[in-house]
Length: 301
Image (tube, rainbow, N blue to C red; front, side):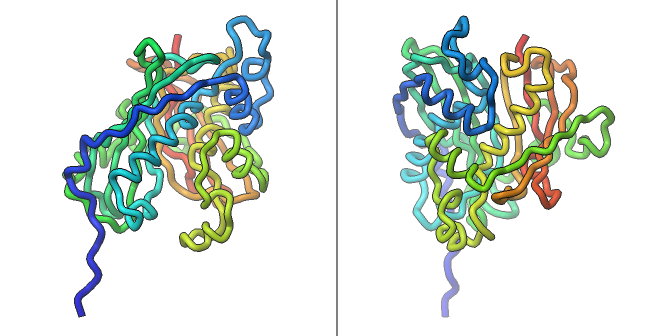
């Protein structure tokens, strides 16, 4: 009997583009996203605030999600798409999204690599405003478990460093002094609230039957929700709090966050770096495994 053929992503996937998709950013969406994360500061809710309310730094995931679905539908068969796990996230904020923005997002398959667990695909999301000026750029890395790829193997840099800023993987809270730590409770309904407020719907986060059918132990929290919660904790420790400008975020995802549970967010005071002041942080799931690891925020002036 002939064995089952392992699914494969061809090298021709690189360069495929979807979009653009247009989005209108209103205050309701910005406030809903902040509320889902448990924010309460006036920066996110006071519509009389000079300059208007702010977008949470990770808000771009909200308008990028439809492009991720479009790209998956165009590039991957259903059998492969179902094996995808959000593995890495790198966001550059050219400027924060604002109320009244009419944004346009295009997604391009930027890279395809062979990794030991499967195929690693990077989708680049480029978002511009109505005048064509850049607003955000995200490199959204997905690992397709048990899938072959025609792409090249990862470089030494990709294997041994976790971020574009060059810190080696061994450096973290266990080896560096001066890290703060805070427990963050995860409510049993957070995945449902985040789904509706972010407008990011994936049934493994809200439908237990679907999650169990996908081989998960139960519904799990979105990786971007865990990352956003950790970013919020890091910003609360800055002198300007939520109003602290953010230029970039980089992170890898690891263990699952179940509901209800808690995460432990740990981070470090800002350090000078070539790109700007750098805040290193991570989020541990209730079982102690890193849910968000090797994470950094680059602060603006």
